[in-house]
Image 1 (cartoon, rainbow, N blue to C red):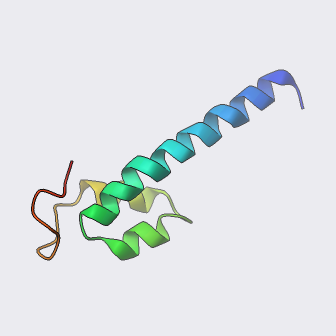
Image 2 (cartoon, rainbow, N blue to C red):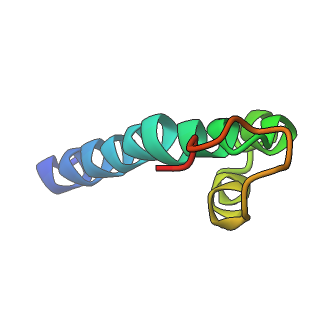
Length: 64
């Protein structure tokens, strides 16, 4: 692999880790546990869970 390919992989892995620690956590805090777990394999589900409004059972003020 060339240096450019290594840099691309490092950047993409960094974006994935940022999504893991921000969007996934936000999805769990909004009360969408199933979307959070399935989002590990299908990351677009994290985005859906982060955009949806809080569930009624979620603690008040849990959204960032």
